[in-house]
Image 1: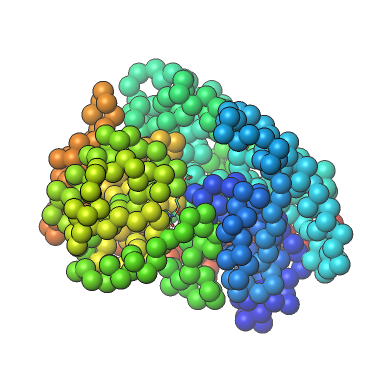
Image 2: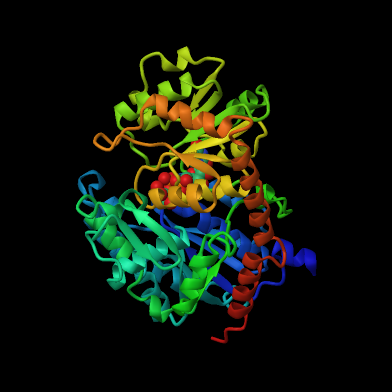
Length: 472
Ligand code: UDX
């Protein structure tokens, strides 16, 4: 029976749809959550839009039995000129198109030949798409949002939504229960720079429009990591369940078959080049630098980073996406040969888990932050936008696993000397010891949360049991 449960064969009684948002940092955690549900014997279909079609094949080849599937639905992108679309237009087009295509998919699933064996019972949707709940309810099933940010960030946005955090900020610090006092540059950029990101703030606010109607709110975090925030959320009667970290199980010393990566990459990683290069380096001697799937750095910042990394006394592996490459100083790649390696995408989890890596210079996207915490890698943080400044604040002041690079107040640029100095602070054998020690503690706690009987595992079990017991 145990094997059946693990492989998800035979024991499935319900079918759950997991509807992702088609951006790398938002797909990864939901795909991983879907795998966990499938590993507990549920039939799960990951729903994503046609814009991700190139990466689909890989996911289908993972061995979660026939329980894990993938469906692509239309997002209306073929009918529009995407380059000239504003963010508001994109969101509205996406909402209208996916409402229709998701409805169509649900009807197809419910009419499929094995629908009586695996009745469609639940929809988990990305929190930025609250309209999906209406689609599910019209089909007679229940749904719940999945927040891909930290609980702290979800809470801050809620304070703005509820009017308990007024914008623009009065005074120099934002004070909210369960969250440390936040300066302007610790707040999510949609909150600290409302004028620059009105559409994103509106999208963030939408997440709360129907939250009172749901019985589950999934968060990619774990109880011990955000204990105080969780307590506050529960005191407000939020039905929040931490189910993270949603990281492929092999990195958490678990034995789910063939769960070595997220399985749905929109970029092609240079696996062999990176791993071979890392294998040739001493333990703890490499700085791994990456700014995620979206960051668009200025030429000036890219140059300072290049010089800062090259001037530091450590080896470095730097991910510079293809679209960012032209910002690198001339001949940089040749200049750094031996000491540094620049690739356009890497297998980040494998890199973070490699013994040669001593620290992570990161933009603090939520996935990167959780991955570093879960793999015990200390961080040098240089947040860029969105939720990243708040994640950076928690990394340095709450979890104490790293230092933040200071940026020039006027230009917003971090200088090479500052970058090299912060790297040294974390990489240095003695100075960096406290960060390494704290990182290892979080690594253990992360594993504990997802291990059988751990807090996140229990939450997933509880959800699965509830879905199983739904009588349609
Ligand atoms: C976006 C937002 O920018 C971020 O603030 C938010 O928290 C999530 O959505 P992104 O900027 O891409 O995400 O960063 P992050 O959350 O760190 O996600 C990137 C993902 O891509 C990670 O899972 C990371 O492992 C993966 N990655 C990154 C690779 O696999 N290879 C790489 O070379 C770089």
